[in-house]
Image 1: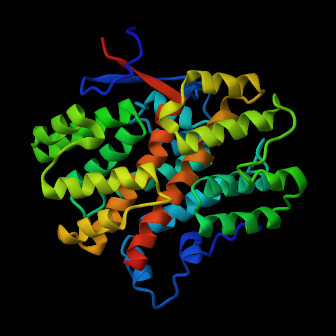
Image 2: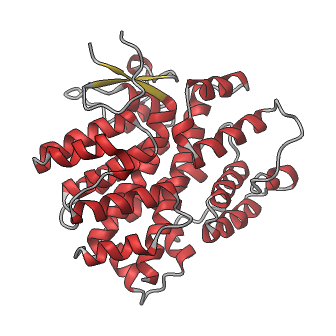
Length: 192
Length: 168
């Protein structure tokens, strides 16, 4: 296995935990339920198996995450991925950034946006709409105690509805959550 | 049970009454709102609190709210901590300036981890997890602690964002 990766990359990564994951063979019925393990779906990532140590939280967290990132209407899927990416860059979650940068590219077919962020990080120079979303995500993640009103008005000026702003807030916030698990409980390695 | 499960904590701390436009907006994402509340219960008042008492969880949450000067959540968690029976040193946890006397104690190590992962998560490394094991935490304790930290930080961000929507 290759060394741990400490720099942002778009290459395929594998997350390896510092904490012991739950063993599917000896998992309790509650753990299997929270893991959504069914006879037809037995593929569970090491990350989710670690979180299964705390079943009650995982059982709420998985559907919450999915609703925030994939619900119908409101902010576009790509916009939510940009919120996730902004948070992951501030919190330096290499694995989260890789996954959601690639998802943004897949959805939006605008690789240049991700390339600019990977090149210049928090100082990325983007088109007006992407810039408004990205800057708000960076600001809310880095100092929720002092979010710039200017960043907020920028969202409004760009034409985002209240529902779209609400969706952006949640996509950034859920990565304030995800980054603090993924970046602290394990580390990514390059896939061989 | 002292953690009210029927009152939405975020509506409560933001003072969103029945006629609030922000409440109506939040209701457009009813599933998300509900799961945010059930996640709160899972983090602060789970069925089996195991090695983190309800009082300890509430004071740890108060400390994180204080670290981000989230006054609304700090007031909520201080109140919750008292309701969960926190007294003395446990109540002191809520003050980020407070340090336990024993530098090597479980609580000291937990508080250092909380402060780091709340304010500067990018600086966390494998070594920080090793310190938790060395202080006597087991696998599940470490995931429990990480989950509490992650949830409260999510909540702080949601409240901060919603305040912008409420006030601008």
